[in-house]
Length: 156
Image 1 (cartoon, rainbow, N blue to C red):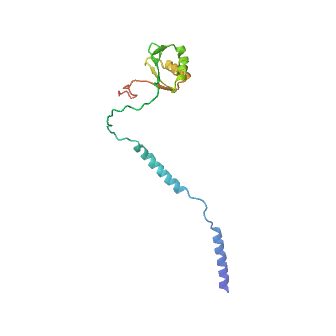
Image 2: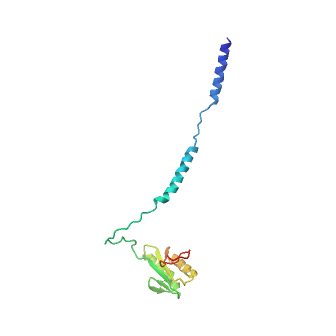
Image 3: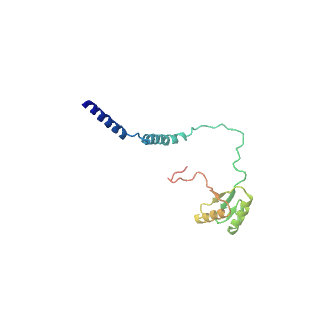
């Protein structure tokens, strides 16, 4: 008789223990984050190595180069004595914006090359760049000579 009573109490306590344990319904993302960080580091280290080119000597060909642009880019020149040349023709500073707007209406591209003498003050170059922008040319390329001095003082 006593054994039956113990048995019933044991069953009841087991049921209580089972009801307390609930299945975990959340995903543990810590291993996922660890794997992603390792992959990120691997790609960050290996990406620069993929861009390194192999030096080769290309063969020569008689074929013509592919055309880069349909029309010749506009060229504006500032001389050391203050003259402004639009392509090869000298123009007055006051007429520059009107002439640029007329040229921009006829052209598809908005590229212009600005060549300025090294003796021209930067403020004057900035004024002409503003005129180019006001005239409709917003892709301004500053033309320089190759082989200049580097910032560390060495020649190329």
